[in-house]
Length: 181
Image: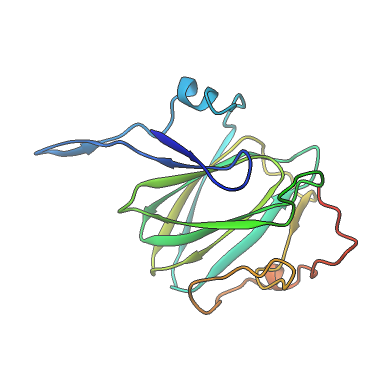
């Protein structure tokens, strides 16, 4: 695996290094020793699989509040998505800065998202599927969210935003009172 630090401290893209032959290919998607080299020492306690039917749909921007913040490792296994993370760590020099990366079945890229980030994505194709590894269990009542169209963030979604859930549309807009987590 090749780990590339993004402009947001602790957030990495992870490119697989497939071994190919006439039968197809094989690639490692996790190795405890390799992830330890970037400071990852948490256990993956939950794995989730999402399916997004319609191109343009945005899911997010989601996070869990302290002390339930989670690390995520996200990989697209069908179709393509524009994956976005926002640094919401209150003392971070990149507080409220976002970055986006295309994840696809074709490029086999993953994104490693540290604690203290909001996460979401836009389906660039129909029938997009993601696998998520989580370092914390989902805990009802401690989740938070930021609107995908929040002007304080100015996320540049590649397609017109469609398919927002009622919940994601109801997240409050950020203001100067938001201090992060």
